[in-house]
Length: 298
Image (cartoon, rainbow, N blue to C red):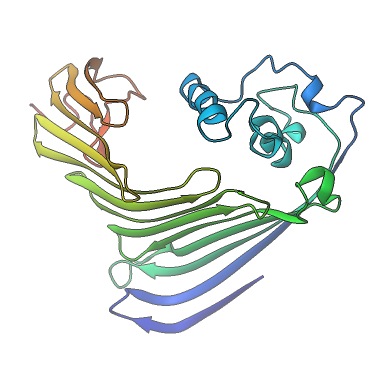
């Protein structure tokens, strides 16, 4: 469903006409398995090594003893989110009885921006929401009929400033309550800046303030920096800094990281050719570094 009003004008917000478009989607899933999920060996892990190491500490440090309660087991989280219905599922051992109705609603508020006579359509505000209803809540969602409520919000205030927020909620005991607020400022190709606050409540809780930037200091040098601070009492979490030299043929980056939570320090050195089509160092300062000679003699 949609509605368009070309008469809306606001010079302060740079809005010239407004179109509101809404898309609804629904998916009903019904699955039956002759084996319980906890009887299937997980040959393809769902998490990488660092998350698995943290999960092992979580079992003892948070819950007192292994195993982790079923409602916090990554296998059952993958089941509830519908992984067993994916054609390209990364793990075929995620299979069990399940009945779920997933509902989604996707909003787009669009306007026109640019010089008069040459304006383009842009997504001004984006809001996506999803919700899952479990008819058999005792079996499938730990006693709650509704779960996995989430939203993703982006407000492109201008061509360079975007306000962001996303969240996901479960409503059973100690279920995840995760909310993020932040802002992203870009000035391509010069640089970008991000500032955000992430709140988590559940079996563990934290409030993390994060900031990062990348800055194209000169035609030959780019720097980037990031820091995270726990506002809930843990204090400093860590920092990372790197500087990249843009050579005629190579990108050379040196950096260091400080992990205050683990009390360790690391250093890094990376060298990559400029001609690679999708290199890690090739996107710094808010824009892709062009191949040598693309902008003339260097």
